[in-house]
Image 1 (tube, rainbow, N blue to C red):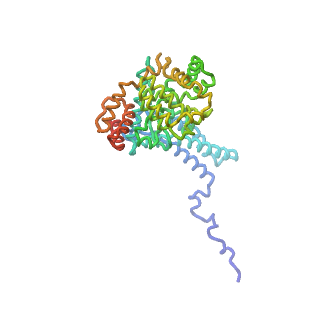
Image 2: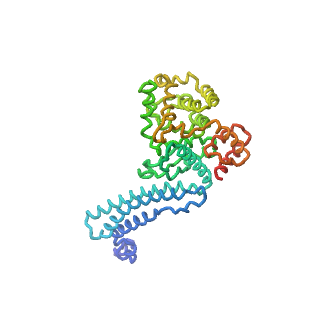
Image 3: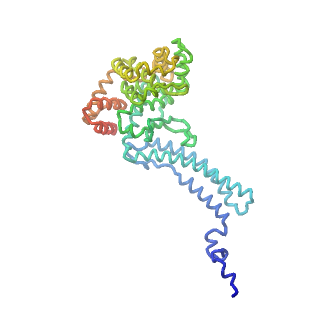
Length: 441
């Protein structure tokens, strides 16, 4: 029997007979591809809108108007750059039906470039969306407390300057991120997270394990001090001052080079001691007190002072500030943890005349006047004093009972929390709760 060949052809292959082909766009696949490309690009860039000032709440823990505005300017600059490419893409896409092969190649090139720019803009938008969004959750009031400590550190330094300087703004902004230790992104630094654009205000990263243990927050003044050194325009000057001090002390140039390399982290440590006193040294010991091998490990490339040297440096500053008894107690503890045998891991030339090296570094960073400080030395601009220690002890008792700490500077609460923990008159949970409640008043 003869077969009907036509009848054996699958119906699905009869493309031309499908009434919905034109509606689906398959009959004009290339123009539709171009239209989708242009529409998607335009909706993408317009969708990354500016943040509203009330978008993340209106309470004290919310981002300030100046923070929102600074980020919106960054987003808008990125969007303007992208819109230029968007208009070029739309023009080429609209004429793709008449374009030759060169036009089609250009469409693909512009599409790829537009997507890359859109990704950069989205990274900026998403970065700050996540940071600001943390303020709407359960940790918002903790982060607000860190903001207040950071602001207090700035105020203490700027009000102590010999001459007025322009007021830095916006103020530091804290956020939570996983990791071993706190960190900071200073104002004006170019960040890969922002597509190598400048960070508009200081960011202070604090891990959860530090937030939940407020007596471990001595690192906050340290991170803030990095930003102070930057905002006071001491970033480039300090290494030269250190080398001059080593020359005056008749110390080897090789050692001066090492301390000049350490200047950023050393400055942040010393400023931390001047801001909150002995509590900073105890907090530093908590951080760098690791295995003997690791704490004594010296590197020719490290920007942090070798940990076994780092603590004695700050102990010596305590002595020069008038806290001899505290300094002796810390030194005894450090020597018991890291006896002379451990120090042999540090190269002989690094250890040679170490007390003189430490004093030279302190002279350069803390006890020498700078025009950037209005003709004062850092130790004259801000200095934790024995009378402040009495206030901290009283504040510790108030944290234990939940009593208002009154006009006590916010940065001193870190020291008060440490004393309250040592006294063991209140559970850690109570100290934690009262610490943040105090900062929230």
